[in-house]
Length: 338
Image (cartoon, rainbow, N blue to C red; front, side, top):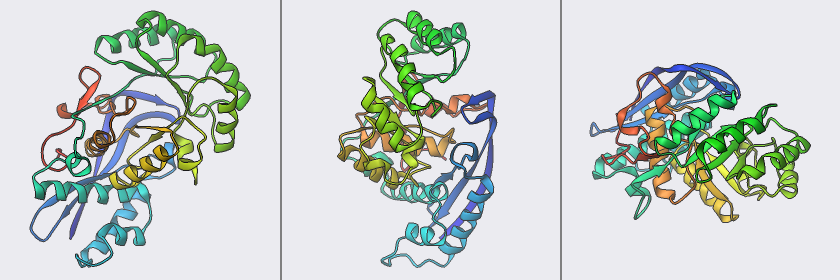
């Protein structure tokens, strides 16, 4: 197997004020794996140091070790290529690219989209949420109104500051009762702060509150205190979190799970506890979003996913843009993207 690695810088159309800092660009690594027959499988490695602590240099080092490993790997043995790469460097954000490339290769060989390899009757479109990041309540209300006009039925609102109640109140007044409101605190609160904040915001009708606090014990304690549904995101990376039964829903990410296969396994563990699953991106590139969309199609139905992030970049690919609050699953062979 031959492995080619390309660094790609995706620039945001305007700076994104994420919970972990202001982002102006996003570095991802596009990985092409070529088999003996000349077929090429496409993958993507996308660590985000401010979010998951994995620097681009760390990802690149892992990818180079995979290239050396796969150059001498003999297909057909008991150990898969992914196993060999994991032995070389067990870094999920890098392993995801090899996993994606393998699924893409199989799909291209069979002439099938990846989602059809994963499920008998996959969804053809994935509901996605709009993200309302504006801090000013009037700006947030305007953004929410525009999102609903564009067809979104779920709005994800950043919270965790002194203007939360005013912001949520203005948004609800602007969009009416129908759209679902999902709050994301990125662990900004203590248990006591979260309890007070959720009590103040619950009257506006909440689908769920994502990552109100950090950690399994804090989440378990808060969930016992509040009537709102609680979801974990960053806390889902904690060992044992997927089966800990501390939340009503778990946000999974293809990069953090080590690819499509790891994400499906994680989803099975979460669902076995009775909790729901939905997917989101870490501002991934087109290949990462395509992989997540195919996985979501296999796991559907589920709550709206946070995958409508490519439109934040300067040159978003048309085939993966949200339309009417949905992203159509690519119907070409493999991942359906180059």
